[in-house]
Image (cartoon, rainbow over all chains, first blue to last red; front, side):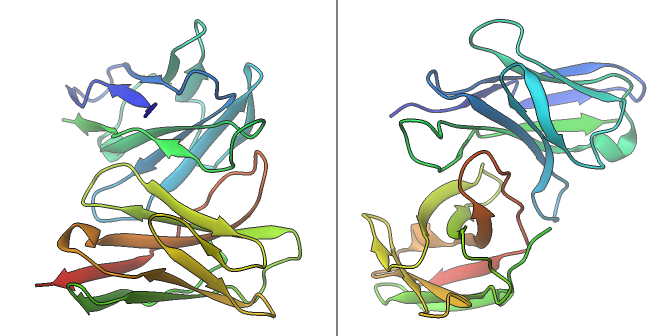
Amino acid sequence: EPEVTQTPSHQVTQMGQEVILRCVPISNHLYFYWYRQILGQKVEFLVSFYNNEISEKSEIFDDQFSVERPDGSNFTLKIRSTKLEDSAMYFCASRDLTTGGPEAFFGQGTRLTVV
Amino acid sequence: DAKTTQPPSMDCAEGRAANLPCNHSTISGNEYVYWYRQIHSQGPQYIIHGLKNNETNEMASLIITEDRKSSTLILPHATLRDTAVYYCIVSLTGANNLFFGTGTRLTVIP
């Protein structure tokens, strides 16, 4: 069964450093998403991406965040200058919405720890 | 923002049916009801969705009331591996994003 893959599974970074979280969505999907989940809290929407541009973003997704689809397979989330409060699980998701169903498929997440 | 209300926690005996309720009284006519679950800290997993008719798949059944203001997810024979947080989400189909609430923490007891 096709799946969304995320790397790395765990990343530790120093405050103020830039991090890039990587995702490989399911190959024929066209809609991509990033979510985050701070420990013990709910899953929060960050950004959605379609046709090489952001289609919607939340208040959390400020100027420190950016997304990119650098090639035909990867979808990345960059945090320019990490803060302690950026520590969370980050989930990538993709959806087909054309020939397939509307369900979103989530990766297993990257645990980001900012120290 | 989440437009659903779910009980924070429920227990279910292993092998019995787990019935998870969800209220979505402000649902609009073209919004679907989606159910996802999150086992421990894994990525959310799609379970089922529906508009107005009851739906069944290999994982669960979804019962939507006639006025569509509430629904129930049924896991017919709960196993220990079904212990998870279950999220009920209303959303337009299409590219609209999924907004997660706090969900129901289901604990399946041996």
